[in-house]
Length: 251
Image (cartoon, rainbow, N blue to C red; front, side):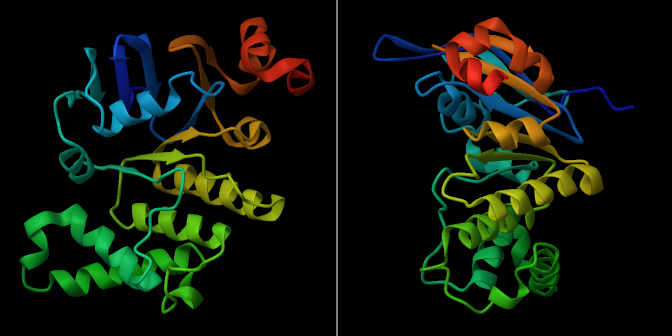
């Protein structure tokens, strides 16, 4: 059994203008598992997410992928080492087709490697296989601009997957989705864990989705980690109930 964390943060602290956004926070995501990151607005979730991605440099602490420290690495270098992310609001290239959006993601993950002979054919094959897996082939020629929210989120997820990541960070993918779309999203994420062994980090406010699909959950509140455990353990933790879930959601 693989026990080494695919991604972890150790004793991370971040301040903005003297205000502590994160204080000595530890976090880890295991391979072949979905790790939820939850907490009230202002808890520090987005800051930690951006530290993991390389968009925010911590004041102190370290970030690791496997046994390699990546604390000082820029975001593009982390991406080329197998870390991919989606955004709270889908960040697609509106004037490009769905298929071209995925190709843009694949090219960005390869850097100068796209100049190799035959690389383009390899990229398109990867794009088409990913579209098929995500059930998006019928949308491949459509402009990304104007896609419904549910489809746009799946396209953004597909664009992240086309890079063949080892770690996938997903930022509030359930926002704006109806129950059917949310269920489909959950199925896709569980499939990535079961079939590809991905380490998935999920920031999400939909507690039903979190409790259904996550293997482990970390809870932040006021920049500090207040709980970490299985969904059931977190649901029953008095600190989490008081700070975030409330009695109704904990029931």
